[in-house]
Image (cartoon, rainbow, N blue to C red):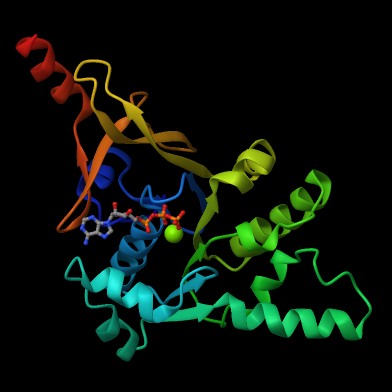
Length: 242
Ligand SMILES: Nc1ncnc2c1ncn2[C@@H]1O[C@H](COP(=O)(O)OP(=O)(O)OP(=O)(O)O)[C@@H](O)[C@H]1O
Ligand SMILES: [Mg+2]
């Protein structure tokens, strides 16, 4: 199976990248690095020659460029080269709402599978950041139908995707979403049992066809973005200190 490097060396070392043509779900609390992970993967896929679309629901593309630039990543250049395209979902949302009003549909209910209509043909990698804004008022049944449709259609088109979900949406629909995706990673904070300090950790919940670490991967967000700190080594050092 072909894989696309995530651009995070510790993650690429342990997973070999994300499976090409499949969907990976990223969940996690506010501020834990979902967007930074999404941006890094988008850049990495561009660097590997894949035509990439970053669909953003919460931040506008200007803020995403600034976030990327803060790590020294030149997203403007990738955009100019035509490798990276940002799509702002808020604009699409307005469009959908107008259409729904004209069809007398409930405008508040999400129809997030419609995101598919706005992915240009020829797209090879998609990051959707995040699905949250689209899931309001959906029942788990409706969510599952739409989510399955989205994942199925992306696979049919051979698109590799990163589907980002905020923690309130994942609290509501996590179980449902986990079934359909090929891989799932959760980002969180926890207290290190040895140091008592809070640290950021990544849990590879699943990654089909891949040997996954059973331990949490501790990570940090530094000058160059997300960096994996080998959890076991750190635990060893701390144990020695104790
Ligand atoms: N240049 C930087 N250097 C170091 N850390 C940074 C830098 N930029 C952002 N961060 C850290 O990354 C965090 C934001 O990460 P990110 O926006 O990816 O989180 P998120 O999971 O997408 O959050 P949200 O749920 O709000 O969308 C900040 O709170 C900060 O701790
Ligand atoms: Mg974010």
